[in-house]
Image 1 (cartoon, rainbow, N blue to C red):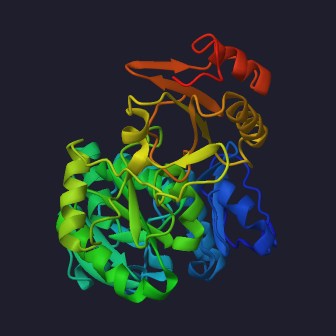
Image 2: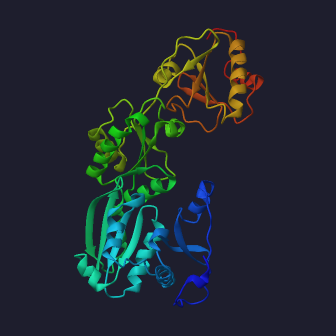
Image 3: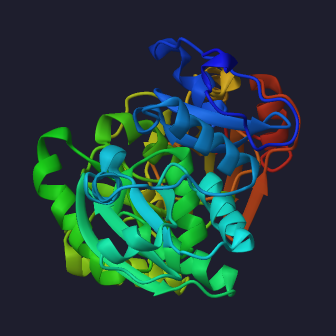
Amino acid sequence: MAGNEIEYPLDVDGEVKFGYFQAGKEHAEILEMYGLSFDEIGFFQNGELHNKIPAYQVSSPQTLRMFIERSAHDLLPEVNSLEDLEIQTHTCEGDFSTVVYFSSEENEEFEKFLLKVFLEYDSVFQFRAVRDANLIKEAGETSGIVKVYQCYDHELTKEFTRTADNDFEDIKDWILHKGMPFVTKSTKQSISRAIDLFGVCVIVAIPKEQETSLIPLITSAAKKLNSAGFVWEYADELRERFIDSGATGSVFPTAIALRSLREVPVVWNEKKSFNVANILDWVENVHAKNEEIFKKSAPIPPKAKGPVQTLVYDNFVATVSDPSKPAVVLFYGRYSRCPDCFSSILSFEKVANSFGRSLSFYQYNIVDNFLAQPVTRLPEIYLYKDDVVARYPDNPLSDASIEKWLKTYFPRPKDEL
């Protein structure tokens, strides 16, 4: 867009440069990095996004001029007709909730505050201002108020109104809580936003074929709670992440809860029915840090023919506590993430053959089972004998080194203990 298309001089300090970016789907990540979506006009200052507006709302050089001048003066995009106000607040395009500041008197400090909130939460909200006194009256509103038009699933669900006072932090919290959709699609941004707003984000994994029944169920729970942000994604997309968090990866729907991006997720107890009452109880316990720990276990396998048996969580404690025979357990994870795990199992089997029946040797997959023994690395080996729990030293694992370590406890490996 050329600068000479603006028919009137701009009331801004310094030069304004114009340009456009012809983007395809492959450029979506670049646009997201700059805080923009397709068909939006962005106003940048000092290399940072300062304001933006959907391109369809710029219908003439005059409206573009107005947007630029308001952006340069830290003011919100303005709505100039009842029809535009209706479009902004009731169509819920993009599933945005809309915040409208109605004021016939100029309050640059308040608009700067709203603009800052807008740019911070632009993936959830669009912010607009109505400053014409006649238009405010025509819309049935009063000057000096802020309204949140809450959208969910592309429909206007509720409207909230409050006075535009100077308690900026309180207004920000009010806007975020009133305008936050009950349940949104899972993204890094939506997860962070839910934690910021509510202190807890619940990520729900749902089978695609159950979407139409589960989304209303989750929404019902979210509405009753108002104390957690809910995001969802299809089970196939979340399976590996949920397995790493402590879920089985085979039971859906299920959920994890995050109090922080740095904390270990709280895993839904997959033995319980996934219904509104149980969700409410679970989230309240997560808030209180009184949640039940879900301890997953693979099925107890039949006895193997080889020298190394497989342990699962459900038989771990009973096995390693058996005083009749000491137990040596190798803890391992995914081969794709633990290059040494496969070779360590081969070495472990050689040592098991060497010791014969004097010791019991087991392998324990921490991906398929709750972590029964804290480990500091993978692979990891522990010896359990009576009340003694001994950890293999921080040395490379080989059949010779494992056997040498065990012989410090059992110098005659072929003897029955």
